[in-house]
Length: 234
Image 1 (cartoon, rainbow, N blue to C red):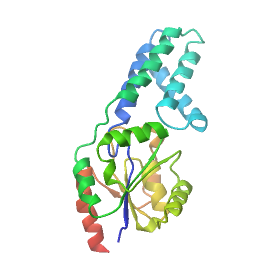
Image 2: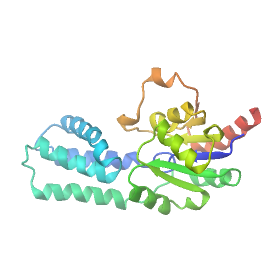
Image 3: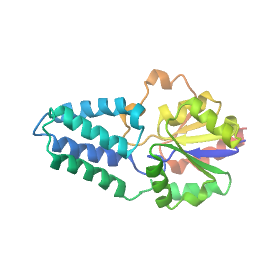
Image 4: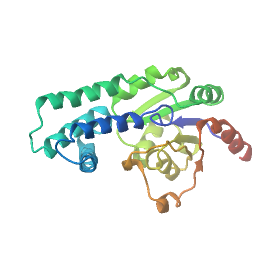
């Protein structure tokens, strides 16, 4: 019997990756006078990965990576006005309204009357807390946890602090790498709900995914029925 249901936030409860994608497109357009869009894409991703150890995840880290990429690809020739444009891109991202995915409000309301709910999300603390507060569904969650990384050690420490046995947790998320496989390794039940686009860093190979057992849904609206089925089979 599940005792807790935990949700990832970005691209599980509300849209997020499409905001980064749109900003990335504007960034490529900004650098068009200096290099091909494909070159910009590759260099930005490379810079983002290198900067994770320094700045973590989130809009601030993404912005610093865009600035660093712009400086490198232009050999330092990018004007201050374009740097200001990049900073304005970041402000627009921060000001973007929180848009729940279809069915999220109803599912969270329904399951929140049956189980204690948690949000476990990674990224910038200010960004994530702001989105949770603006989402309109914060009151349904007993705990909101923002972590710097999502790996088995982080989850294990989090559940230990909360006094939760991971084997009693059902985790729901859109990332196999961050939301599903680490939980399966701890003995939790995991549900994978793919988002229509995924940051490359969050992907895993098919071979890796097939080594683990988890459930896949096409929409969060299917979650209550899956929960009922899983509980009925226990």
